[in-house]
Amino acid sequence: MGSECAICAKHQGIGPLVGPVIFENDLIIVTHRPLDQASPIPGYLFIETRRHTPTLATLTDPEAAAVGTAVTRAAQALQKELTPEHVFSAITGRTVPHFHQHIFARPLGTPPTIPWTDVDSWPDSPRTTPTALNTLCARLSTHFPRQ
Ligand SMILES: [Zn+2]
Image 1 (spheres, rainbow, N blue to C red):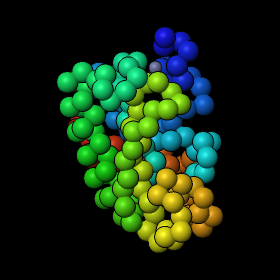
Image 2 (cartoon, helix red, strand yellow):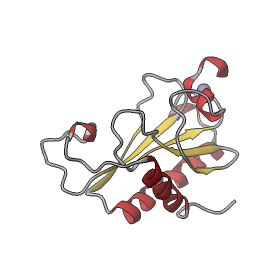
Image 3 (cartoon, helix red, strand yellow):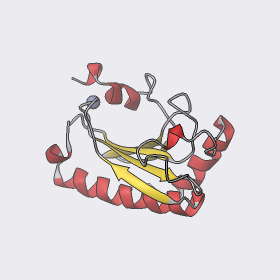
Image 4 (cartoon, rainbow, N blue to C red):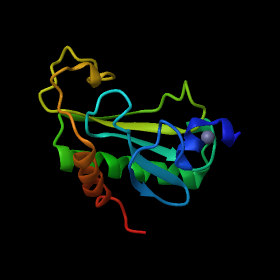
C-alpha cells in the first residue's frame, strides 16, 4: 500500500507533504508542515507512524505510547518556543489513511472570529520564511529526547 500513500511517500522524502523533520525514531516521525502547503504560519506539526496503519484504533501499544509522548513533547515545544495563545491537537484521517496527528499553535492575538481549525484564514497571522522555519524546527527538536 505504501507506494500509493502520500504519507509513506513523504517518509521516503518524496512528494508535496515533505517538511522539516523535528524528531524521529523507529516508530514515529514528527515534522513541520512544509511552507508550500497553505500559508507559512509557524508551529504546525504532524506526528505520524512509520508503519502504514490507518487509524488511532489500529496503533500497536508501542506506537500509541510513542505517539502520546511525542504529542506532549510537541505541545511543550510549541508552547515554549512560540508562546502561542493555545496548542491544539486533532486526529481526523479522512483524506489519507495513514495515522497522523495534527499539533498546531494558535498565535497570540488571533481574533476570536478565526476558527480554531483554520488559523490560516487570519490574514495578519505571523508568517515564516524557509530560514526562520529551519531555525524554529532546530529549536523545537531540542524538546525531544536525543537518540
Ligand atoms: Zn502510508
